[in-house]
Image (cartoon, rainbow, N blue to C red; front, top):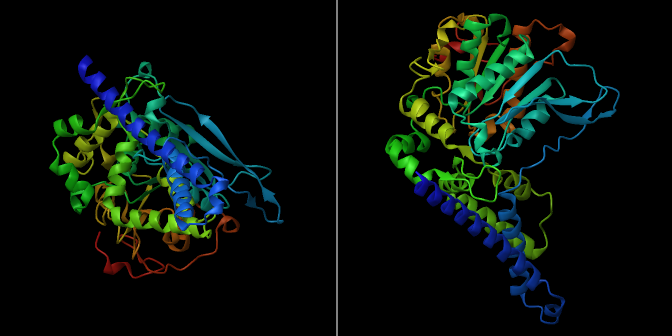
Length: 449
């Protein structure tokens, strides 16, 4: 084990060395090509070299920096801007519960807990989701920590620990909470709700909205599920698990490194990413690029990755994807079975994108069939036509179609006064189903649950 740990640290530090070297090469190219003497020879190669250096330096530097939330002020009814403060509510070794407090504004009746995925990116990936909900909701988010910065003395963190964190967060916020789980945490949010339904019914959330999550990965194949089925657990542990290097507080902790994850992310759409970076270099060379352009905004977030604990990654692959414990209603936490059928008082909604290549349609809606104790008129599903994975929680589809549906679903089951409800908006390009009642936007009889 000692030799394996040393080998893992060497591999981890080797990846960091490669990243650091590329960042240094970019900085060097930028500085050399920008040297004033080269202005005497206005050859375009120097502009191209400088542009390549700026893009390369920035890209590799972002990989080890946690992005800031940078939530813009919220406009009030009187035209006044309200500053948003990010405040921790509960602090834990592996993740905090944070609250976005809007200064000088009354507490909103809609209390929303956004459960961010722990799948390689920071919770700030949901910045636009938070921003879109803040005018109408009191927003809380799970802010997961980078495993490389967590000392080994803090112990393990697997999917059972993750689920218990969710139970504690929801219980702390109280029964009027509306939970929105995006991607990876969808099945575990379902399990956490079931635990509360059995152990502390008074603390259950009012609504549970699952967006693009792998509740039943076998319901529809994607490259992600194919990879999980191809690799054995031994192969995964041998090829992707490494020890955190000496540079960080978590030195010696076994992790699935963020840089390794990033390589997988980019490989899935290599041509698209390559074109984006080539176009950015040419824009920099021509002088048409800017600090806040779409490329920088997207890749500053996309390239900022975090390590996951090895036990969390491996248990997710084995128990959620390979064994399908949530899909079979056979999940256990601390040796206790979690019966999803015990959920009875929570309204459940699922959202999927027709072009989602990470959690394909069918994987998330499977949650409704598992919730056997929830009445049909308290279930809802929505399939957003033409939307990919990112679009259903942070893109155009979320802003125009899905967000209004989510707010209406929350209002419907919270019995809010009419003055607190937003104006109804008709869905465009989506398919919604009420699982037993006619949906106000489309004919639900066309959809099978």
